Amino acid sequence: NRKDVRVVTIRNDSLLAASWRLLGVGEEEGFNCEKEFSVYPVAGTLQPGRSEELTIGFHAIEKEVFDKTITLEWIDSQKLLPEPSSLDIKVTAEAYNIDFKFVFPGDEEANEEEEGAEQQVRGIDFGSVKVAEGGEQSFKIVNNGKYPVGYKFA
Image 1 (cartoon, rainbow, N blue to C red):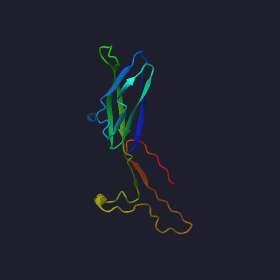
Image 2 (tube, rainbow, N blue to C red):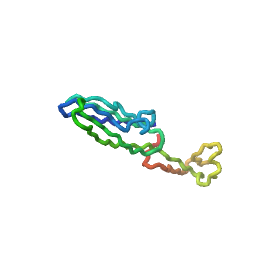
Image 3 (cartoon, one colour):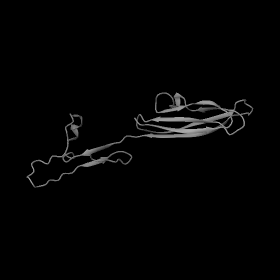
Image 4 (cartoon, rainbow, N blue to C red):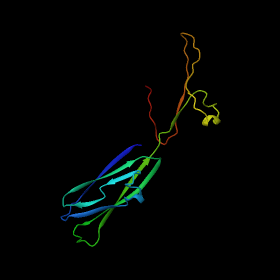
């Protein structure tokens, strides 16, 4: 359920006020509908020399890779120009799972049929150890995910 935000600043460097809008940010494209993406504002007017910040939010809900394109379209507010100008903006994101498991001694021999059964506490059992004698056991941390995972023992 990680959330991330990127801010894009648009600026009107012309001598005329400009009306702008974002295309491709509707519910049918997966924006602003309580799903993964949000963007605001989606339209406005910029006076000469002024800037506006566009906020694009991403909320990782399910494991998926996203590659979307939204379009910034603008024209002078008085519509003196014949057609609006536009700029495509690529929006990419990835929602991924951290997927690792601990493999303790004896897990390799564990029966696959037990997966649906009640989960037992697993760990390392040194058994009986004579005073002043040591014992050593080991276990593995297996990363099944796409990216490296860090760990520390506390």
